[in-house]
Each structure stands twice: as structure tokens, then as C-alpha cells.
Amino acid sequence: MSIKFAILGLLCREPLSGYDLKKRIAESAALYWSGNNNQIYKTLVQLHGEELVTYEVMHQDEFPAKKVYAITAEGTAALKDWLVSPPELPEIRDDFLIRIAWADLLEAGQLGDLIDQYEEEVGVRLLMEREKARRKLAEGQKDARQALFERLVGENIVSFFENELKWLQKVRQEVGRQEVE
Amino acid sequence: MSIKFAILGLLCREPLSGYDLKKRIAESAALYWSGNNNQIYKTLVQLHGEELVTYEVMHQDEFPAKKVYAITAEGTAALKDWLVSPPELPEIRDDFLIRIAWADLLEAGQLGDLIDQYEEEVGVRLLMEREKARRKLAEGQKDARQALFERLVGENIVSFFENELKWLQKVRQEVGRQEVE
DNA sequence: GTAGTCATGTAAGACGTTACATGATTCT
DNA sequence: AGAATCATGTAACGTCTTACATGACTAC
Image (cartoon, rainbow over all chains, first blue to last red; front, side):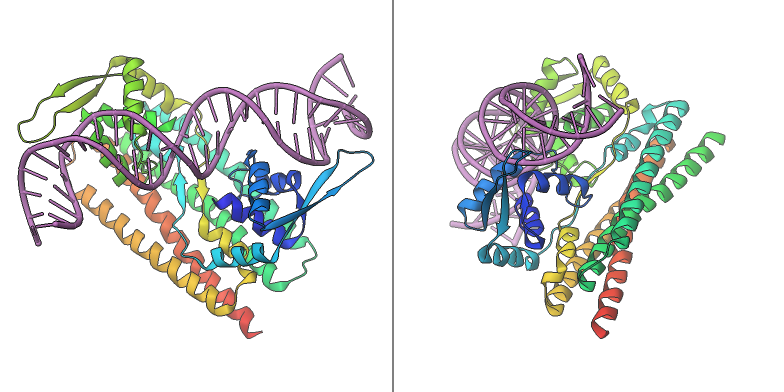
């Protein structure tokens, strides 16, 4: 049920349509699950039923009409309640880590290729996240407190990928060392 | 469909029952998703249908009979194919990170409590993972290569939580600094 | 007597993904 | 001509979680 709070969070900053929400969630590394998710429309209907959001239909000349959702007072209260509820540890689903756990089934060349591929992917993603963070900083920020938290979230994500690259160096070293023996 | 390969991987080390698999997966930080998952029994039936595993029913005097599953040659081949297929980036679902992104809605005291709670949880988990890694190292290992990969996986997990704690220190500092201003 | 381990499984529901439908407009 | 953007939504499927059923045995 965290997509619910992701939506409430975004709406608490500004009113948005389902389409906008979908894009915002897809672009955010922290929220991204699930931006490719059409549950958003369903969840909006649900939130409307719970009276946590309202919407206004905006007619447009050149484009299809859109429903612009806004958070209600109850919605804001529900969001704040959730914010102070006990946080859970992050869940990580790491495909590559499972492969490494069974890497003894691979030949040295295959393992090398696997590491190269993953390092490449992590590197690309790291650059993307750094760029995203840089752009956010450049934006004219309204609230200093909000900007600080935004920056800290970006730094968490960047440091995750940096940590991954550091670990990959270690993997390379130790795998190389064992092959020599 | 990664639970499929988690099962094949574990069975490739030694034959196990569904119950054993469930426990192994639940205990492993890398595989843990989903240890509380009864899909295991369903997936085993499926894998049996695909002829990637076989099973033998073992009758026990004091306990219910169990089905001990073993991997087939096709199963091993499927596992190896998956191991060399392109790895995906890890997926992180970080509850706490989302809360920080909206922490500007909280009062200083509430934020402090939230950080304390999360730090406590991360700290406990880090100790658990270090202990797990230590115990694994102490085990009489058969294969040096396998032991190396097991250690590297453990180090990845430990370094994730260490990184999280480092980041939390930074969060504390910067939040404290802003409050003084 | 309450809870936990051993062991397999079902059922219901929540959550997530992919593909598709509609239909005008704009870009290549 | 084909694809992308804007915009809302449905349908089908797949994955994941929670709770429950069964039943003997062990430990507090």
C-alpha cells in the first residue's frame, strides 16, 4: 500500500493528473516502483472513495480532458500519520547478487563477462542519478527544508550505486587473485 | 520468476524438501524474498512439470513424510543459462527514504524519532548480518571458490547497511545544522 | 495448555506488469 | 508512414502475502 502514500505525497506538493503522477513516479528512483503501473488509476479511485483526494475535470482544446487530483485535509492527515509510523528496513531484490552466490558454476570468462555487464549498467545508472541530482539542485527551490531532504534522498541513491561499484572492484580483485593461485 | 532460480540454485548444492527450501530462503538476506512465500510448493510442482527437478518421498517414523527434491541435468543447464543471462539492476523499495523525501511535513522532534528508530533497526540488522557472515566463514568449507563467492555476497549485504548508517550520520548533521540556522 | 518444530498444501486477496483500446496532435 | 506525447482506463496474467487446515511430537 505504499503507492497510496507515494500518490498522497506528490499531491501534497501540488495537484496532478493520473498521467502526471505516473510520470513522476516512474522518474523517481525512490518511488519508481511502480511507475509502469496502471494501479495508479485504480488507487486514485480508491483514494477518492476514502475522501483523501478530490478531483476536477479540466477540459482542454487540443488534448483529452484530464482529471486533476488534489489532496484533502484528511489526505494530508493520513500522510502525516504514515510518515511517523515505524519505518521498515529497505527490501532489496538483487538479481546480480544471487548470480554471484552461484558463480562457482561458471567459467572464469563467463564470470568476467557478467561482472563487466553489471558494472556497465551500474555505471550508467550512477551517472543518470548524479545528473538528476544536479538538475534538482539547479532548480530554483522554494523551501530550504524541502530542498535539503530532496538532496539527502539523492545522495542516498547515489551512494548506493557508488558502494556497488566499490564492491565490484573488490570482487574483481579477489576473483583474480584466486585464479592465479 | 527468480524464485524458480533460487530453488534450482539451492537444489544444485544438495537435495532438499520444500520445507527446507523455505527456511533457507527465509534465512538468506539475498534470497529472502520470499521466504514467507508458499509459492515454493507451487513452484516445485511447476519445476517438476518442466522436468527440471525430481523428487523422492521419504517416509519418517516420527514426522510427516517429506518430498526430497533433486535437480536434474536439464535443471542444472537451465540454472547455468540463467546465470549468464544479462543481470538486472537491483530493485530497492525503501520505505524510509520516501519518508525522508517528505520529512519537511514533520516537526523536528518527530523527524528525530523517525531517524532514531530507523538507525536502531539498521544497526540490529547489521549485527545480524555480520554474525551470519562470521558463522559461514567458521563452517568447514568444501570448495574454496564457492566459499569466496559466499563471502563476497555477505560483504555486499554488510556494506549496504554500513553505507546506510554512514548516510544517516550525514542526515543527522545536516538536519541539525539547518535547525540552528 | 500454549507454543514451536516438522511437513505439505489450499484459498483468498493484495500488489504489480504487460498489453491493449481510444483518439487527436505533433515530430521525424 | 510511423512513432511519440497527451490522457484515461480495462483485461489478463503473474507474483506475493496472509491466513488457515491437518496432525504428531516436544518443550516450557
